[in-house]
Image 1 (cartoon, rainbow, N blue to C red):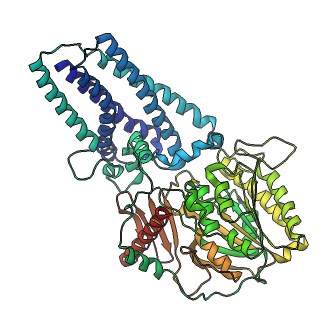
Image 2 (cartoon, rainbow, N blue to C red):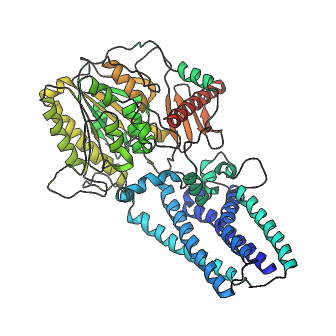
Length: 613
């Protein structure tokens, strides 16, 4: 009996140590960021992380515990049991090591620990892997091999503790009671203690430094808990009663639109250019006196420049919905994952299609990625052109698809062809080259991120100039807006305000006169702003606010991994929904509290709107 209990205890203890080892390993992997913390804080990472480490160790020990329980009634020879246990150890070692290695590699790009966010991308593995470079891959592979080997070597000796004992009926009863007691201890470890709340990620958060909280999180728990738990659980993000929430959201809108007309016509041909990853940290960058994006910066002076625009999220699928549907991003879920809801969203394309516009979307990669093509067709886009329908005399340039030089030239010609037709059109282009791994046929800057952005800027500028020199320009409105920012410089992390700031420019012959709009807004506000300028209905665009409307108070809103930010000329707030706590703020305390209420009300409304789908 004691050998069975000691076998279970040894397995749990070994697994707990292996799980705890992930913390210093993570801190070493990201030593540059860990160096900013004190030794006491680094110790706290491991100490607080033990709770979820013990939860994962408890889950993984359940199978050996069940085997030991069975042996009280069924004799299993020692060699057979050792083979069973060793086989189990190999399986869990490979799974755990894969999760740890993938998490370690992705954190640099995503800024949060591995969770179910990765699952939709696995449906198109080629595109999901397109961001991965060899410099990312080989350390991750080595980590997978090394950690798996360590787990197997550490766990194998525990299998040898088992002995095939045949207890008497009385001893079997006492052994059963003892094993059930051990099972109860495992249950407590899995549950995370005796408190009312079960184990969850927020239980290991201990600091206002989000990197330290992330470091304390067990990636295996983070992934499995989010993968087995719906992102859209009824009752989450419940901050107010439905009436209170509706009142707060309603107070952000205005029944009357008080906006000046900034277009020469209400029926221009509309060209929307969504710039991949080109945030303000890139467009504002100057290297040795040279602007990284001179064409975008030139267009700032020629059209309407929106100085304070925020990306609603940090991924293309979420940014696309915010831009084209005026629908802010949920803190965790991508609405594209829920076609039954995505198809019901309002959209610029649907409104313009109803006004007689031809609608199209062009992308040099695979539009099936993250259900994009389903969303587009479901919201009024009539024609989707991607790498499967594009035909160039070369193979696709990158892992993602065709580079912007080819696609921008194609799109430039397509727009001129559409302009020659009697029907007005709404044509969207999503650029591609300024995306990881930032490999482009260009040599303007040493930094790969800046060089890729400069490449896209060059060809977007060339494309717009071709329209400017045509008769089509007079009746054209060109809107440039980024899908999200990027971690440039590398010190910029997910959720940082500076990462969310993006450029938006309206230019073309349909612009009355150039000026700078200083109002704070987000991508989701483009829809209401454009449709109001065109005299079209904005019914259903409940989260989109006219940037030109002087009758409302303007602010920028964005979400990141289970958090949100709110910004205005008078202050800023970043809030972490996991622990329901403020991360950072500036401005008067009264304003900060108001921002908190606004953000929570938007998040609650979004969540309820999606789950009712």
